[in-house]
Image 1 (cartoon, helix red, strand yellow):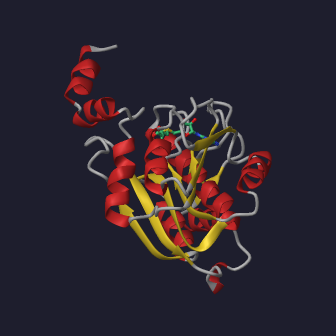
Image 2 (cartoon, protein in one colour):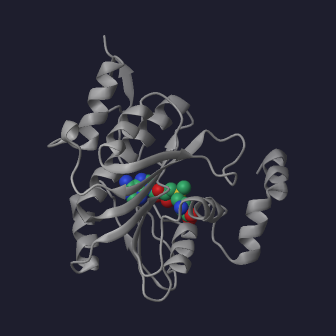
Length: 247
Ligand SMILES: C[S@@+](CC[C@H](N)C(=O)[O-])C[C@H]1O[C@@H](n2cnc3c(N)ncnc32)[C@H](O)[C@@H]1O
């Protein structure tokens, strides 16, 4: 570990606070700040936390829903049990994972989906941003059939090309869509969260019959960007692809 990394982490108040309060990750404070501002989770809610490892957001969600609520966390990686939550291992882009979640819900709808999902970073910002955008858009699509009308959806996005496409797709599905950067995000970070509230009973006319992913692809096409099929250079657990300028 470099000296700089060590000093930055020692100085990081969110990390210290997380440790002191027993949260597994400093990111717990990002959800706390989102919750303080937008109240996306209420007592008794059914909440799905997508990309939950190591469990910081799941811990906060369990506190917020209280004894009558239900929290399901899912991640590619295994997450140590969180008291009061059900933890699943799975890839959210795989229909089998959605089947597992459905089974767990036993016919209930979710009141809120929270997702701090992030691909394994390659270190190339453009690539990471593009993969993250694609992933968050797929999370939105996966959430729509199991989220109740009036429900909320939160996902991470990295600033950059194409995010307006996801925001537009979200506006077709929720009456209130805002971007929010919690102060608990590192100063140097370009991450922000898309906070969507009040899921509409029906997707708006302009997007009817289309997934958010299809809308994003169209948006990118308008920017002269296409989604390239498999890029062998990218070693991503989810096998996503990067965007390149169309020829
Ligand atoms: C930044 S971490 C989440 C931290 C978490 N919110 C917390 O507070 O502990 C992002 C997570 O997204 C997960 N992830 C990435 N792609 C995924 C996928 N396709 N399906 C499920 N989880 C995924 C990663 O494994 C990683 O653990």
